[in-house]
Length: 438
Image (cartoon, rainbow, N blue to C red; front, side, top):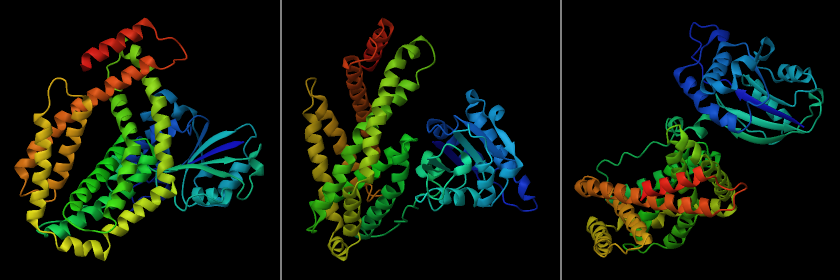
């Protein structure tokens, strides 16, 4: 079995007055390579032999990877080849077929269209495009490179910079609508359509799982859509709205545990190096294993037919003439009334809190604040002062919820069946961590 990782060089400067071979990476290309480095490492793309085109942009892609992952010594291990400076799939295939038989794991940093055409030759399910900085990972059922067969390989995974870095994704994200002085019905429909486009655009980054910000923004857009839809339920008679909202609720719940794990891991990894960090390392490893399993479930959910059907049903509903007509009957006083009803329920729960209040009630309070805030954001000029208050309250309740979640995960770790008994140092670190949180 052969493992082949095809990596396209990161984005280069335009060829204005520069020989093609000497084109350097652009600033964006540098960011692409730096963002891709940890993802390539996690996928094992950098574990085997590394071969690089002689073109400057390919060499600088290697240098950026090496600088980001200095412990791997990539620059020393990599081999540069004039033959890899090619745009022809046939030449690339011939170079591969001439390799020694012992190289079972191999990564190439080269150029399109040769890389993409080679992948499409070797695998029937190869992607239709390979962006700059992107990866195609193939497995090939052969013992020798010279026996590479047409469509005998399998595409194991693909990856692009905009899937591993939310910062890079934002450059290509759907543009937010210019709501301006639009009336409430039009504003709401534009907002919901934009949030739908964001949900679908973020799915690839959520599925890739390399940057937690994708999941966070995905959940924000799901929750905002649901909050607006539930408010509309109390104001309008719209066929299918309740059913469509159930789909949003179902898929938001699938992601809750993973978001909690991401927050917990982020807080632990931020601990400064030293004895405390070393004592916490067993918990970090355990949590990472839990996160991988939960992330697998999230990824599978995104690939299910039920998910696609629910998303299509939501999109069709909010774009339908019936929904547009129902919104046209909406008036600002109705929004005010719905907002004040939610505020009244929130205030009633808030005043009922005491020292014996269970954590679940605090969590419910936080969710109410979010839904009120998302509704008020439909008219930010009218509710500017309220939004400022809600943002501060949401932040405080969120901090409390995160503390509760972290305490729960601490208990889960201590009570889990471990392959090795926990050392006294780790148990002390757990107790210290719990006391800090409380």
